[in-house]
Length: 338
Image 1: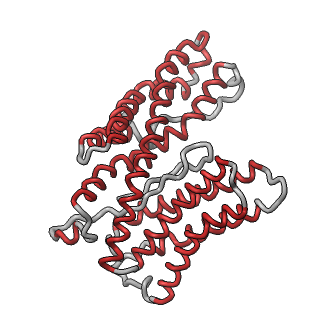
Image 2: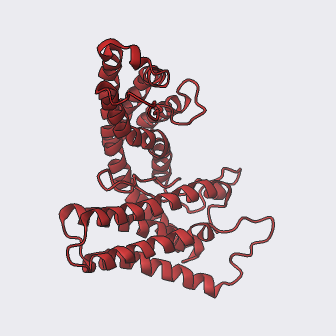
């Protein structure tokens, strides 16, 4: 199962990263379930996966689009567009989309997840609503995109067409944003316990091997991101508080690095075997820790600029998002256990 990607803005939901691994299916039951997880946990993984995919793709796109769309609309209706045509925005989740394929796929996944066992009230109803909102955005979004791209607003009396489309689009964007936040929080709650049980299963069956250290670090990195955002929101961001939330990730990283030093051939897996995921993410972990240290040092200055603090936290979140994107891509073609 994939990690869930976060939103790299302090004003939005904090990075919602939850580690996991897709299990490559084979005829062997032990390969299908290498960790020996319970059937309920495996069903929970299967249910959450399409929600995670949607969070990482369609939701992420529309949450990022919303403020730009609103500013673009204000610029048009206030005649600020006069002169060179401003940059256009896109309601397409991917540039090569023709008919909302990604939104439709996401909506289908959410609808399917809502009906899959086990029932999770915090997810099921919201997933159905989000699916409807995504489907509802496809046509008016395409119409608005054409309206902007073709600069039809220059001949739109009182911007009637713009207002007509926006009456449909803005409420749907708000629904998607609200549903995305609800689903992110619900997935995080579900995944926290699931990932810990998976980590315990790895340790029980294989010991604290490199897979254990990799996932342990991913969980610790997610926790640090969450804690930093909460500290900032509550006004409790200090050198000491940052040091306290940074320490678990530093310890996890140090332990993983020590394991690699004790197993010098871990990276040399041969031409036919993929390199363990640790080597794909360790530089991101190091960068995230370095940025956390810079944040801590900046808080030592009297009257530190709040904008500097927000920028540093967003940078840490961005480090984590890049790491998760790399993890999610690289883990698809690698074994569940290194």
